[in-house]
Length: 466
Ligand code: C5P
Ligand code: C5P
Image (cartoon, rainbow, N blue to C red; front, side, top):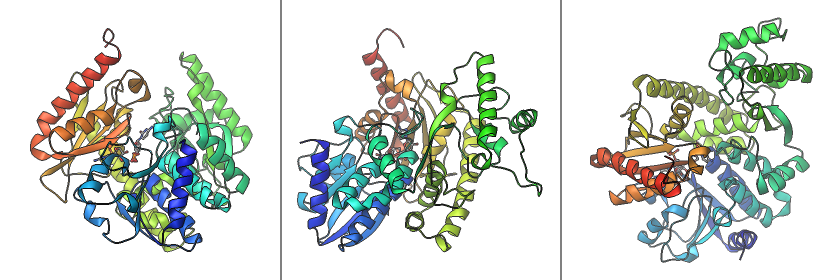
């Protein structure tokens, strides 16, 4: 059996069901998954309803209905199959569509997961799309949604573009359908549809350009020196997507010169980007990165359905709600990032950590951890803890690291799932990004335990060079 057979089997199982419940994750990837599959299912005239959870854990399991429907778990489930057993879910009523590390259990729940086949740069929305396309080849309009999910889960970050089957199948389907446009050597920076040019350049620190990264005024002067128009006659700031190709070339060449002058590499200056010509210019819906942030804002602020409505085409109330959440989301994340940097992390031998208390929702600390890492010592994984408002006895843990540290043997998924299990909690995720829930009383010991596990991982991979 190969991945393609698993996709076939999942499509078959769905087509044979009378009624389906989708249980999906609240982030951009999970919201995209749900919108892809639930539309594909409705188009087959099968009854479907959806539930979103922030994570599958004992506290959220009661949200899974105990009825006769086929329960399709998306962007979660692979690592929580023990909970299915505990809740007496049978093999017949479960289908898992996921890209997380799987957990071995006695029951053989049906799963379509790219990871065991070595496909590690595909998100769950990618898997969901392949299943939807197998259900009906006319579903290629949904490739756009799969691209948003993949970009939202950072699948394009390391290689500066989507790769593998996501690129060759899903992106190509989107282009052929006509709602996706690929820009091959675009500037590798965020906010190209909504941020004033100089802010887009200043907020980018990958690659870090001296005098421009983290320096909005420096970026403005840089553009002025190049003779780039920055504002319309009425004073509105231009964004990257609306300036001419020639202006873009001028900026990119000047940035490259600056990097070279500082002895830095220029390869990460370019990235393939995914634009959506069917959306309104200068809105966060115009490219995959900003669209994904908008969905994350909806999900992390407990309104994933609003994100789902937008993916289905609602540009009225849902879109206005989402814009509001996006502003709030950005402000709180900026605040969280500043809090981490101002407070400072505590350093252990193999990790850096901080407890942010009850100041921020547990659904966004992972995002803050990722952003803070790029401004701190990125050779050491970062661990952020916070309170869980629904349960004062629980603590949420989020960890992030970099591809380079993963190459040196670090596996955050393994570290957090092993360490949290020892204290009666649960965790999972990826080598590069993982999370867990643990009992509050175990916090201090837990950090020390994770530090030790990371040390063992480093030693195992390369005993001589730590
Ligand atoms: O559920 P899960 O897969 O959704 O988590 C995705 C999160 O993990 C993203 O928010 C992203 O920050 C992080 N991640 C990452 N690099 C990867 C994969 C995931 O930073 N290669
Ligand atoms: O919540 P956070 O963004 O830190 O999650 C990072 C990754 O860890 C995600 O892929 C998420 O699905 C996973 N995770 C998990 N179990 C938890 C918490 C997070 O598998 N209890």
